[in-house]
Amino acid sequence: MAENEIIDLGHKLRWERTRRALNNSDCPLEDVVAAMTADIEGVCNSLPKALRKGPPLMLLRRLSLGSPLQVQAVIAQFNEKGLATLVNDAKKLSRSSDAGLVATEAAGLLIDRLIDQVDRRAGREERFRSSEARAQLLAEATKTFRAYEGDLRAILESSLRDGPIVPFKRRITPKHMTAKQLLNISVARPHQESPHAR
Image 1: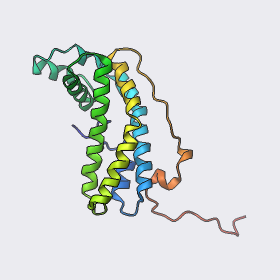
Image 2: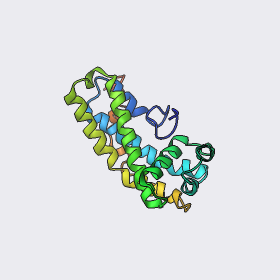
Image 3: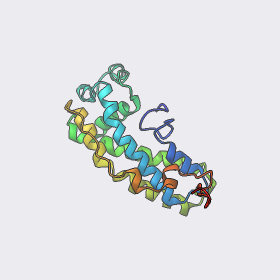
């Protein structure tokens, strides 16, 4: 999967909070979870827009399991090639062209891929080298990402049916998160107003 695709933790903008939280040894697990939640929300919000820009995923449903060249040619039309490949893999695994079944399989694969990417990135960090810390992180990542699986399925299914893309309804807003959770790292001390400033 190429970096800078919406479903890749290496995306230069989309998963920045999660990467910073994982890289910061002083960032508590609850802030890592808040970062993952904010980032998956951002992905769910951006996915409908990305799908509207390209051809509908329905093109993948029409493909026969025949020619790999035909599959590559269709996937090449998509801006989000990693997502198109994932949906095609889901079609093969589900052994169906039914939009609902393919979307369910694709959403599950997407979540599994995100959890695997968190696991790989965490493996590079000293604080997640212990099996207990790693297991706790992966349990939280699984819980966080699985909560959005239904949303992803509905968005993907609407494109697989070539209907209007289902919009994502945000669950959190920045006001429910602390400033530290949004930034993950506070590099400067909070500004304190001088008593003489008034």
